[in-house]
Image (cartoon, rainbow, N blue to C red; front, side, top):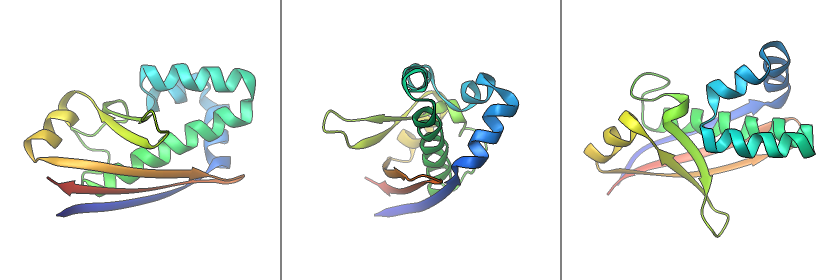
Length: 130
């Protein structure tokens, strides 16, 4: 049974401007430790790809927060939500702390899809009750 659906489109130029204004602190606010490690690796090799990675994670977390109906209000925080990949490459949401508990208590599971192009990152999230 569908619990909620969320979408987000993120202008990569806005992510670039925020990153230029706040530096690595901006990424540290949004990304988990695992995501930060991946972001740093990608940014070193190809800075533009690092920005796209940051934008897709920002977009995916926004879409997820909309699908669960919380927005960025506790227990939902940037760092309680991690976007990872299954061995197949399929994106997945890994939850931590209070957000993980909140989802378990409600028997909810989330599915995420994300993409990026030159100027935009977009995400679509479906949350279902098991």
